[in-house]
Image (cartoon, rainbow, N blue to C red; front, side, top):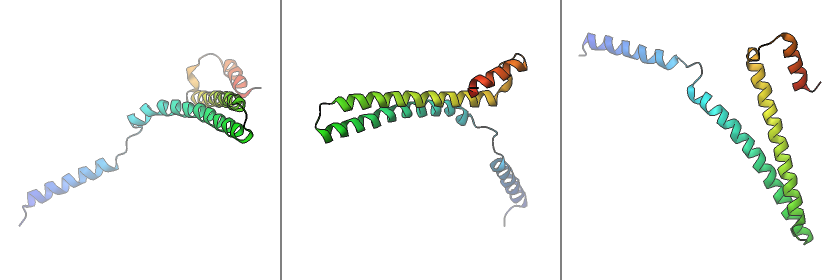
Length: 123
């Protein structure tokens, strides 16, 4: 006892809903918004992890040998240095990725681009 008009409208509505469900956005705004935040958190975590690992190793050695906290200080500083080094390599990796993604941003001649490539490759 359904109205044929209502059944037709319902079918049209379902077709529109299915069309909207199948339509995927090209690049969601949220993905672009959080990508730089994720990169920053990655670098912070790398630094903190280096310090924490150095601290843990130093504390463990001091406890094992019963020494003053000399190992704690040394290994914490070494962990900090390792964390900074890892952060710098991550920053260089992200910079290379951005340069590959957007090659036309620098301008200049192809010789400039070749020089930049040699500088980033270390040759």
